[in-house]
Amino acid sequence: MEAVRFIVYSDYLCPWCFNASVRLARLREALAGRVEIEWRSFLLRPEPRPGRDLERFRAYTRSWLRPAAEADGGTFRVWSSDEGPPTHSVPPHLVAKASAAVGRDAFERMHERLLRAYFAENRDISREATLRELWKELELPPGEFERSRDPALLERVRSEHEEALRCGATGAPAVRLAGNDAVVTGA
Image 1: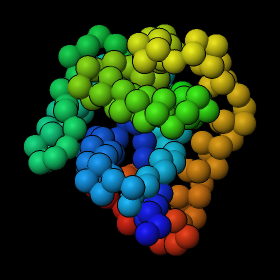
Image 2 (image 1 turned 135 degrees about the vertical axis):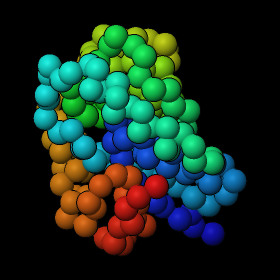
Image 3 (image 1 turned 180 degrees about the horizontal axis):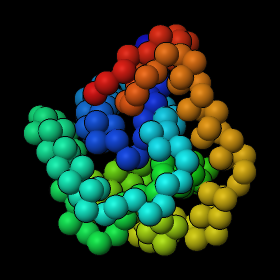
């Protein structure tokens, strides 16, 4: 039997995407070999906006308590760090794509690590230093991190975002079956 392939448009700054990631990983595990998941970029914050107010951001992260209350979701902590707020969505997507070039397992580990670092550990995943630390922590090949600077990866991230919009995604997460352009938006 051929596996069902889901294409998931997601953003690393989206709490509902964290819940969707946890749920889809469990689905893939439960239906071993019968479900494939391809993660694509959806940019909630596509352009850098440095200088955002940290206290307002901390207040915003109280809204994470809603997805935190959902059964079968990610682990969340209201922002307590002096890091951040993140400037934009693009840097973690580039690092995730660079890890995918190392291999499927590297991507899966980086994907989960980015979400956990941001939502559970309150780390600013738009900072290059943070992203390099995560890369090193996962023991990925040091020189391969530089792939995240490849303009072709940036084009791919932006192209995937545009693809999601063309398919009708109005937010993230958004899921569609491979070969079908209809998307279902929401966790």
